[in-house]
Image 1 (cartoon, helix red, strand yellow):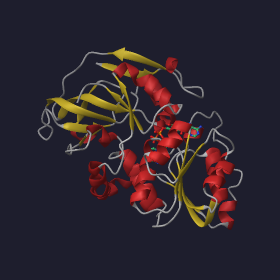
Image 2: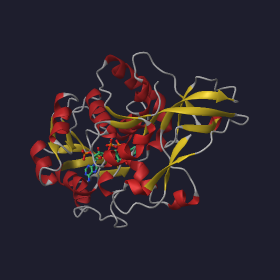
Image 3: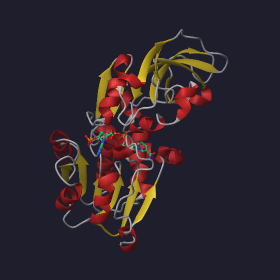
Image 4: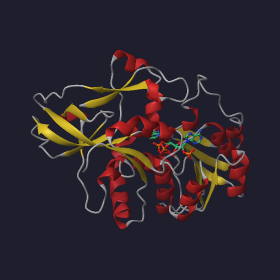
Length: 330
Ligand code: NDP
């Protein structure tokens, strides 16, 4: 089977030379294990954060979210053909124990790949960030950054279903901005490369915002703090603008103290602490995905050899929605 190994710590923006493809013999499963053939691999910004830890140097493989099919089984609960989710990505096949996988039951009318995106951890992140962290109320105005990306496009669309007031997004190109307002139902959007973010946000939200769903950090966070209303909330989901930053830790927003005067609540969160929301989330969202009310945005690269370029392209913003690699046909 083929896998990708990290061979050095990226200095800032990762490069192809930081990775190598390896081929190893395929071993069969032991008792209680299955051999999984991967169908889709997801390449996500959080993997960039993991690349700064030293685990790869100790021989640990690269973590990555994946959907695969059981092709050999010595685990009674996981017969051949079962579709599973696991985190042993960046490889074509994996030998996994029962505890390493979660069974995915395909739903009629829903593409399988959606279970790595809007119906997987991506959508769940958006859902818990809005409902549990920001506690978005009907009629409240929301700003989402990296809004054409996987979590951001889910957050904007879910906010609509939760009866948000104005939904405003930022993204990194004119085409993405148009996609947000014409396809995903955003009320306003701007290109964060077009000028100072503070000015673009103030123009898009002249009366302010109640909630900021932050995927980006840095200047976006500072701008949102300025534009948030009294008692506003920030659900801090990620800081993709800072993952390639060599300063450790990256500088905090210059206007952090404004949070006190406006009585803003800023709360970071991790989706892995909210697994108990999964059932409620799926009950809420699956009907909307089936009906087409939610657009399943994804950028799919074909074939395992594309994985490194797909990852680098996603960090540069070349994706719309979830970035996936199709390893083998469904
Ligand atoms: P995306 O699909 O949003 O891909 C990353 C996007 O980030 C790119 O498309 C690019 O879009 C944008 N981006 C890259 N660099 C910059 C920059 N310097 N400034 C502004 N935007 C930039 O990835 P995900 O949806 O998977 O992740 C989005 C965020 O959510 C990340 O911060 C991630 O770490 C976080 N996350 C957090 C979780 C949690 O549990 N808290 C779980 C999952 C994700 P553009 O063209 O618009 O610049």
